[in-house]
Length: 166
Image 1: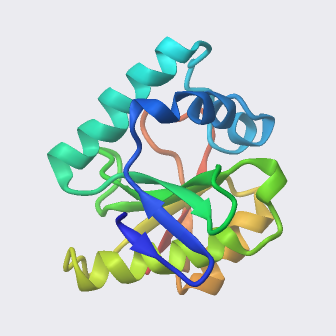
Image 2: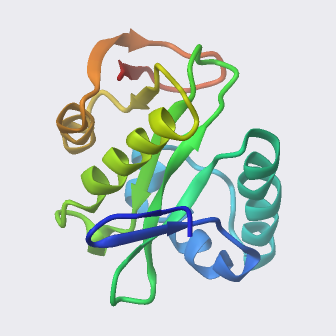
């Protein structure tokens, strides 16, 4: 386990999470709000976990962690830190399956990850990007202590992103 809050646990992903990752990456809200990762099979989900998620843990000491509501046993979403070439700072990200929306889990997980970034990883600035039309995600960032900076057109991204820092 990487982090724990009163209602959540966060841990590194393993290939055993392939079915969950497949569901999350193909959820309409994920595709619309974050993007289509092109992961369509369990084998592709396992490869995504190994290359993108486990690779980030190995290369950076952080990544997107699996978030589980205590007492539920099944993953609710992802929350963590990502190093992107198109951003000047490490990026806090999160995504939850729709059945877990509205529970306050994104805000709780984001606050825990931000605290971890500062206290354990000694990051003084953390960025976040979000679809400018995603009002719920923008509220999560603002409630977690992020400030809106501007809207940016990032290299390699199809749509503009609202850029925040904390």
